[in-house]
Length: 285
Length: 285
Image 1 (tube, each protein chain N blue to C red):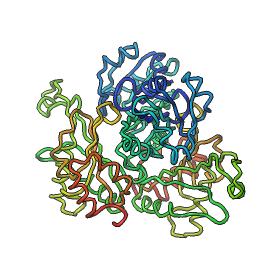
Image 2 (image 1 turned 60 degrees about the horizontal axis):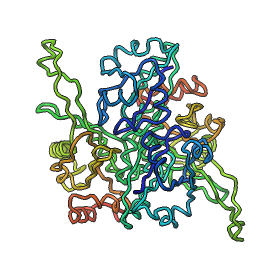
Image 3 (image 1 turned 90 degrees about the vertical axis):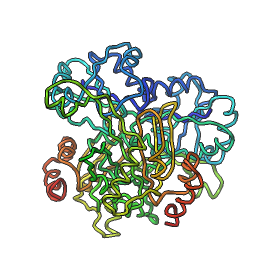
Image 4 (image 1 turned 135 degrees about the vertical axis):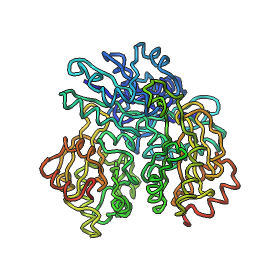
């Protein structure tokens, strides 16, 4: 049996009781370590589980999945995923491959950022489609996300923006020379995301959002030091929310007064927040 | 401290390790028992926690919240919520009330149906806004959900439909006579939901969906006997998916081939599924 086990969002204790039972009994335990991270490292997990954990990078999962699945028709293999196994990154390909090999799969769900973002007090019912923001470079500033956000904005819905992480990436030079030297990991911040959004708006000029648009930044959702900040995109582009992971929600026009009351408490500046709220949000808009 | 603890979706072992620690140490433990249910009853939870659990009905939470919060400035109170505390039903009102009383709150996230529905293999990125379906009566068939679904359909996005549950409801007659007699609990099935959707379409006639529209029914997400079925709304209106809770996803036109491959495996009828897929879904539409 292949078990896909969600680890939740913050640390080793966010695994469910059922998930922990699976991990303790599995023959091999893999940790998917390239689409998201916990706030603790592998050593901490191994100590907590009392088991060795094998880090599975993108290469292993995408091209070496048969190694992961080896023997899973007879023994239990646990594949651990930060968040939920079918949340922000789905692992349907691994399940489909297992099925081709005659191996059954079971999923142990857990909190995903896709629902955990509810901790902002914004109603999940009022969210449109989720988008991803990648790190812009000098020459590559993809704006396809802007079209999705535009669709949400036109309906007055919130948009969850998931922020890029770069783990075990090679520089172009090292890749070209075949040197297995990896860059230090990078995690996009709320400030970088807000800055890039304003950059896209400057280029596209369709008025989907602007410096005064309200948004919520969320850092380390579910952790003891979770941090939430509400403000304009301009304000958020200058905010320091600390350690990763970060996410951002662009507020939709249909936002409810109860949502306002909740997020206003952690506004960068309540006067600015109120002024911008009155310009474009809530039941009168 | 007020702890809002997510219990996840299926049974007593879906609580997280951190959540269980909180429950074991809290002075009083409440279970929110009117917006969702686990597949096990309160006795099972009490045996697993080794603690008494107080059932909190709608009345206690909405008008008696100060009783729940009594003493929480000095001791720890655990308020247990099926799924995630800020998922399908948010408990921001309780947190705001706690704050007014000078009581801090912490949330222990868990799987919510809002992300757990990813187990269908449908990408959470491709979902629009979530809607709720209430039990229709002879004289009351609200169709405001249809407008929301229409917005999603026009964008080609999936729609998660959350299904009504009626727990501890009085009949109009018993209510009028002040008799505290409650009706047996009712949980909407996928078949009832699909049937009501077709009823709304017959009335509104805006072509948002029809008998041939593809959808996925999900029952007992996250449980060992989780059940997924893909088919047309007509097919799903006749399907028996067993015990509650159920949810339904109306497929969006933008659905990806990888999503098709995944859900096709549990189609009521693969030939019908393929024929209807080709008529309106995937990259060519």
